[in-house]
Amino acid sequence: MSSPEPFTIEQFYKFLQKQKLMAGRCLKCGKIHLPPRPLCDNCLSQEFEWIPISGKGKLLTYTVIHIAPQQFQNLTPYIVGIVQLGNCLKIPGIVQGVTQEHVTVGMELSLDFGSCSTTQQWPQWSRYCFKPT
Amino acid sequence: MNGKPLVCIISAGMSKFGKHDGLLAREIFSIAAKEAFTRCPKLDPKNDIKAMFIGHMGEAYEHQGHMGATAADWAGLTGIPATRTESACASSGVALCSGIYAVMSGLADVVLVGGVEKMTHRTTAEVTEYLAMASDYPFEQWNGITFPGLFAMMATAHMHEYRTTEQQITSVGVKNHFHGSLNPKAHMQKEITLETAMASRYVAWPLKLYDCSLITDGASCVILTKPELASKYTDMPVSIIGSGQASDTIGLYERKSLTSLNATKIAAKTAYDMACIKPEEIDLAEIHDCFTFAELMAYEDLGFCPVGKSGELIESGETRLGGQIPVNTSGGLKAKGHPVGATGTAQTYEIYLQLTEQAGKRQVKNAEVGLTHNVGGSGATAAVHIYRRNQH
Image (cartoon, rainbow over all chains, first blue to last red; front, top):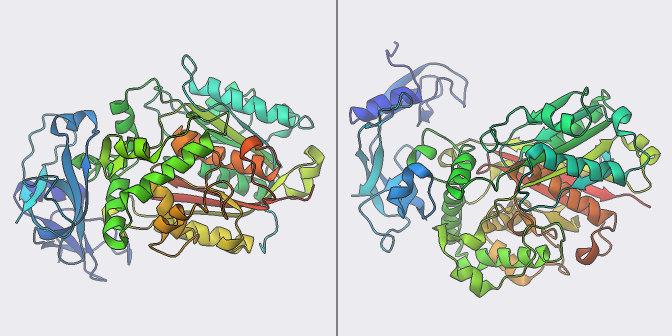
């Protein structure tokens, strides 16, 4: 039983571009990895399967970025946070569709699939963000 | 090790921290090295120093990598093995760990460890970007999360969980600026008021300008030897009795806790166990206050107060000079400055001065045991060292 797609971050973003949020599950110990990894950090197995993950979650913590790197300066101030998804998984992302005054720890968010608009050679990963449910 | 010295520090040097216009990192490092050589007249640097470990974070600042050999070259020590260690802001704390390994292995009797960074010639946007390179690229940097942003998210989580206030967080900076005003080598030597700090603009909410360490140029170093050789070089050695280094996931989002650094806890346990020292026996500490909140979190992770009570500890004044456990008497990263690669051994430099009664106006009376805590990135690396004053 083998999966054709490698358990890499590159592949994670390829799935994201197809509007799929996917994680790797270790076939030996069952640990679910988001992002996927080619080597299980729990049992050191290299055998995984892809499983779909719900993009719905709760905001665990956040900040409002006022001083940003060059590439993000036109977005300031913007909210970024860490979102608790199901299966004990967490993922960081930009939070849109809510103002600084109304963002709260614990609010329900869902992942919004963006696209890959870059023309640079590497990386050609797609963008995503979180929006209030 | 049962509290026995692992190695002894026989000398130390540090450039002034601040803006060194017109100087390259290597040239700033030569200032720190020369001070360490001068402070120890019985040492013959060219013959006695057998290896060197240099913390340096980024090639991007000066378009210059390979800082191990470069620093050895400009310190007049070409020929010896010279290695650069890179663990983001913990680069020279980790250089110190490597130096201890080298001396204890028996392969090198006298080792110079230090660090350097030249940052102020770059714009804030450039520095923000270069520093962010030490965080996770595919998810954190990809989403525009900066270093202040990572520590801000930990602060938000702590405020939510333990009711820690923005005022408690910002008062760490007020304390450290007071200490910095007593340190002639600090980048910022003026006191600030809580009102000024609270009114400063946000960098990454809830962290404001006065919650962030400074963009600074600087270099620092210390010279280590075996305990049995220390008296050959100096009458005032300082012993390192505990050394711990630990790692954690590169992504903050993969960690179990967002209100604590597990790498700090592991490194501290290793160092405390090795030194046979309990947190309450520490007389003073230099803590990694890259952001004011990081100092509060470290109070808890190092065992200086119960979990969730760091806001109360800063309010009590016990971590200020004259308190039970003065923290960051040098001014810390906040006021002394944070030339990232130089920070770890600059913390050691302060403890060395304190335990040899050379700290001037900020001298902590009768200090016997000191601790340094150096963090890399958002906590994927931590190095903790414990020092004991030798009987003079």
